[in-house]
Every structure is written in structure tokens, then in C-alpha cells.
Image (cartoon, rainbow, N blue to C red; front, side):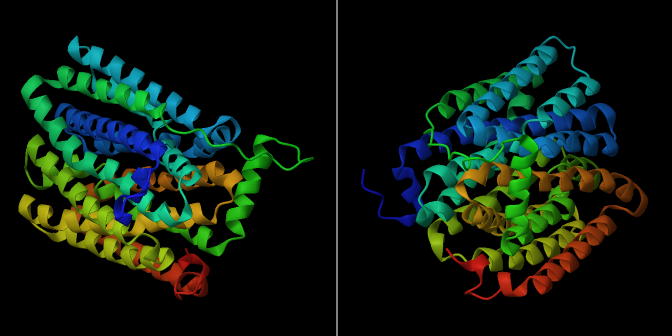
Length: 414
């Protein structure tokens, strides 16, 4: 098949990518519907911002074991690992659906389910990106990663609104059946992804899990652009993502005094900005300077977090959140490409697994935000998080300037 004339959609010329994009879309919609449904259930049943932040944190419990998923994927194939993960999501969702339909669901059971799923879900995005890196030519990599993020971003719009709408129309149990169906569809489509040839380890090297992980850590440590990207990934998860991935149920209900529909609008607003950013990056493709763009939009993102805490009412939030979605994608997508381009093929799974470790900043940031909001208020908490993030981003720029800022720097090369 001839590649499309538009570079924006050139990755779809590859059959494996079409299957993967569709599978990721179904899974991402299920993720978003499930998170919104359960997050609202927790805040309504308990009226506790602490439990809302705990629920959000549990979904990322598996960040500590994410490198092991990458290690297993490097050994047996990343498609097999991804399929097993998606089967697990469907099974957990089915159990929660049965509990909801039989009126046996409780906040404690929701937290237990979130904890089990949270051991697996953080590795999903990393495995997706590894598969893209294995099946996509370098000149289409930025476009492919950007279009892949559309599956997540569209879920923030469609999945959020669908989750709120189906709960209101059908009840929680019936809405959860739709989540199970989406997970199963994603699983079936995953089997259409190509299985690339695995890179054999060097002859004579003793293969042990610890040695394999150490090899990946050395590769990152010795490459300043990749090391800087890892640190920036941890930073934005610590200081930015808590306000859009965990605290939005609290913001909708207790800050804005809105309903579940209002929560859906807030989540969709973030997704709308992210979609615009993904389309923009997929169009400009290889012309992007990844390291420079990562730093510039980290600064913008943190400034917008501060602004988000100061605007009054739902209308103000709906203005700022699309800008936050735009900035976060223009920061994190170049970050992912920076890591994939610099990773040796045989280490991609382990390195992206290490990248997933950075998500651990999110539960830390979420858990810290609960007491801070209770003590100093929501506006002051956003100012504290955003201000720290601005200073930390500037510190990274100063320390690794020659590797990250000049156009000819390693971090800005295709």
C-alpha cells in the first residue's frame, strides 16, 4: 500500500498500526469511563477528598513493577504481554459490574479493584509505545506516537461524556457492562498487532533480571537527553497531573459545586486540548525539536496549573483546562519520542518500563495534595505545585542546556 500523501496520517499505511490504534482506542475509552464512574462513586458515597486521592493513587500502584513488564516483553514479546494485561482489565471490570448489578458494591471493594488494576495499568502506555517503536520507521515515529495519543485524548472527551451519560441513563451496573465490552474489543484487536523479531542478547552475557534492568539503567544514565526526559516525566507527574488525573471529581463537586455531568465536561475539556496538540504534532512530525519543546511546554503547563487554581467557577475551569490539555501533550509527546529514538532496540521495553516508573510521581503528588488542600486550600496548593515545577524545569534546562536547547543538540535531532 502506498503511504498517504498527508504526513499526518502516514502511520496508518502500516497494517499493524491500524490494529494497534483501534485496540488502544477501545482500551482507552474503557479506562476513562471506568475512572470517571468509580471516582464519582467514591466522592458521593464517602464525601472524602482523601479517599478520592487514594482512589486516584491506587490506579498507579504498579509503577514500581513497570520495568518488569518491559523486561518480560523484551523476553517473550510485547504483544503477548499487552494482551495478557488487557484480559486482566476485562476480568476485573466484569467482577465490579456483577457487584454493582447485585447492589453488593462498596467503596472498599472499589478501592481493592482499583489497587489490583493499578498493578497493571501503568505499564499499558509504555508497552504501546514500545510496539510503535518496533513497527514504525523513524521518519513517522512522531506522527505515530501523536496519533496514538489521540486514543487516550479522545477517551477523555468521548469516554468521559459517555461514562457520565450512561450512568445517569442506565445506572452504574449497566454502564459498567459497557466498560467490560470495550475492554474485550480492545483485547481482540490487540491480536492483530505485528510481532517483530526480538533482538537476541549478546553471546556470552549471562541473562538475569537484575542484570537486564541494570543494563537499561546504564543506557539511560549515560545519555543526558534520555536522563533529562526521565526526570521531567517524574516532575510533571508529581506537580501537574494530580489536578487532572485524580482531583477533578473533588474540583467538580466541592470547588465548583457541580454535578457528575459537570465532571464529564471538565474531563472532556482537558481531552479537547490534548486532541488538538496530538493532531498538530502528527502534522509537523519529524520537524519537532523534542527536547526544546518538552522544556518550553513544561513551563507553560506549570503556569496553567497555577492559573487553574485561581479561576472561579465551572466556566473558568472550562476555559483553562483545554489549554492545560494542549500544554501537557506538547510536553509529554516529544518526551516519549526523545526516549524511543535514543533507546537501543533490545532495551526499549525496559527503558519504557523505567519511564513508567516516573508515573509514581502522580500518586505521591495526589496523596500530598489531599492534606495540603485541607490545610491551605485548593488555590494555594496549585500555586505551590506549579511554582515548584517552574523552578525544577528551569534547573533541568540550566544543567543540561547544551544537550537539550540548541537546535543541533542531541535531544533535538531526528
